[in-house]
Amino acid sequence: MLRDYLKLHFSKLSKLEFEDISLTESNFTACNIDKEHTTTSYFKQIAPKWHRLSTAHSHKMSPLIIVVCGNALRASKFNTEAKTFKGKDARSIKLFARHMKIDDQIKLLRENVIHFAVGTPERIRSLILQDALSLEHTRAFVIDWNWRDVKLKRLIDIREARASLMNLLKDCVIPACKKHHVKIGLF
Image (tube, rainbow, N blue to C red):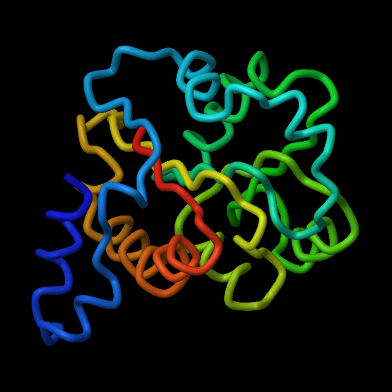
């Protein structure tokens, strides 16, 4: 499904250029396309040993799980929904423009170990391009695929959000999938 959107969005790339951003089944973790899972059950499926992983995680600037949402309000709500899964000891961060200035987010990411991050495509991409956020130790990059806004549009249906997401995938996430074995999930 995501691969079809990539192919459509980047249709003007040459065959060779498109091969660089092509994804295979091995680049994906479990997907919740059928909406069978709650937030907690989905994350338990993609990170069944979360407590052990989060306790052992010591890498700054590289959360174990990054979730991308269509807007700041949804990202904030998603972070709240994932609270049960994350547990009381896991540190999370919200990465979007409304929450705090990018310089403050950069400082937090560089000075702290973060386990779970949730944000918007453009802010996540900006932080990666400024070397403040790394996907080197990230296990899963989850796209909030099924959620719909009041107009019943998904993240992928909103032109500006889709363009930001596609650029984030092309410039940052897909190379990390190939280099660091990050898995993409669709929730």
